[in-house]
Image (cartoon, rainbow, N blue to C red; front, side, top):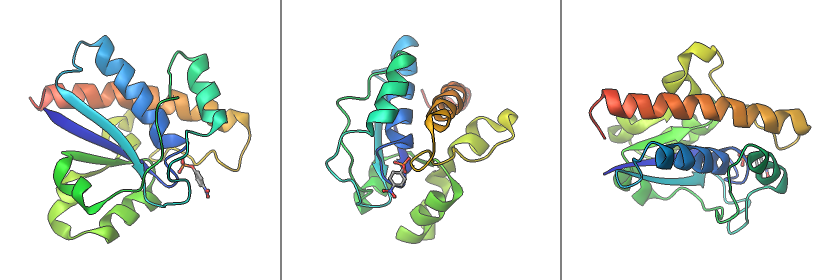
Length: 159
Ligand code: 4NP
């Protein structure tokens, strides 16, 4: 079993979108028994809340259901429990690095840069304070990086 934690700031926009999209792609590939998937935020701003309604609506438009996800903050246990902690942007990767010792650095990844380098955009932009187009971009970027992540796990023999 491989376990993957998607991480953003609030755990209400980008990382729950990544959790929902990646989960659906994993199910479609018949790999759901091999990969444990979760998401969390580096802040506690929205703990307990459902994903932002704009993220839920945009995900639903593309066929992904985020409604059962609830925001939580990253914990120190996550660094042991998960094989990969995948940040949506550099700022949250830096947060993950600062929360814990260097011994976990091999588990910490940047979603687009590490799994969709062909996109030539290394961060999933924070859509929270922007318009609708930002939420569409989040879905599109995450769909591509999710495909790349499945290919990565397969090529490394992790699943
Ligand atoms: P997320 O988006 O990190 O993709 O969940 C944000 C959600 C909330 C805030 C910032 C970003 N906030 O400042 O409350």
